[in-house]
Amino acid sequence: MERHFAKAISYLFHPLLMPTLAMWLILNSDLYFIQFIPRDFKLTIYGLTFAFTCFMPVLNAIFLLKNGFIKSFQMETKEERRIPFITTAILYFSAYYLIHHDSIPMVIKLVLLGATLSVILGLVVNFFWKISAHMIGIGGLTGAMIGISVRFQLDQNLLILGLILCSGALGFARLKLKSHQPMQIYAGFFLGVICEFPLLLLG
Image (cartoon, rainbow, N blue to C red):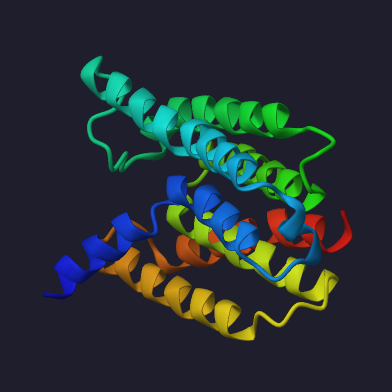
């Protein structure tokens, strides 16, 4: 039962879903400038973010699997993760570049910039040590929401508490599945937070 729960949590909070979830949280928040964004424009932001940070990386992973570059979608060794990390970083930066328009709120650009930075730093760390991409993802989301809350004096205490609890559940899941050691879990979460929090707080 615990193993099934761990797998479900790992899929639900997959790192490739975190940028799209961040967009949804921001575009449905009480930030005063969000109300001026037309609905169609919001859908464009959702679509572009999902396409470049989830859909295309998944297609790339399928291609790599079929051509023998990776053994499974779990990418259990740090060696298997190098090519997917590189291509994902390129796709994340492409999303940031395409969305870098005057009419797009800065917080949205900064979230994608932080996500891109986290993938790049995750790649660098991965050359020497296997780090949890799942925890980088949810750590980045948590850090972004805390940064937005502090910068704009927005009451998001329940959301932040929920994200922290979900982070704990995800960390437990990754340990239960024997995908990582505890330090790889903590390091991933911390890396995600430091890539997003300062940007959203000061950017």
